[in-house]
Length: 235
Image 1 (tube, rainbow, N blue to C red):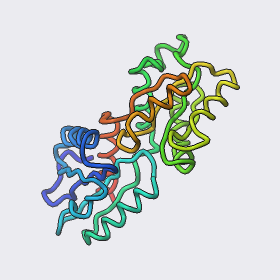
Image 2 (spheres, one colour; image 1 turned 180 degrees about the horizontal axis):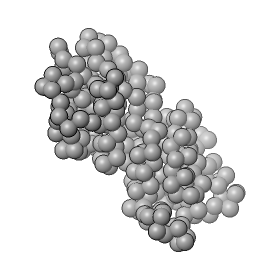
Image 3 (cartoon, rainbow, N blue to C red; image 1 turned 60 degrees about the vertical axis):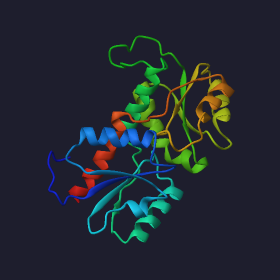
């Protein structure tokens, strides 16, 4: 990301499923602080068409951890309806930064070693991790690469599972425990606005596992947003 941009540089428009409040507002605030040279606008997916600037280029970055085809189609329709010619980037994941943020969220709950270099000889707090997502089997398939990246960081088995459909987290827990992994944790591969409130807590309670918080306004999420914008500037 260049440290300065011309006045006519494309606007960065964050497209948030659900609504442009809460976690989405916090992420937009972090992006602005970390990248003061970028003009940042936040919009809900449903209000995106009215939020795109007229007569100016824009880069739309979806606040998603995977390429949800339903949301991406809605964003595409909104851009087309606006007539702005804005460019839409891919979702934020999979990416090593996403795996790093998931690792940190687990460590904040005492469910992973914070430093995997200095503490290699210390036993892990859990035996395996379930990477929870929403969107059914399509979402589970889409976050497999993130699961592999997280497993590499944790040096533990990580399996992706759905929080909102079957076979879901329960089936994943049964499979892992059948393989000898008794202590489990759920790492939600969610920014925080994609799923009903409490879905992670209920899933964790049902299988007797610990759980991390969603990614939320983690600095890695803001950095992935800026990288998505910067990649469009480069092209």
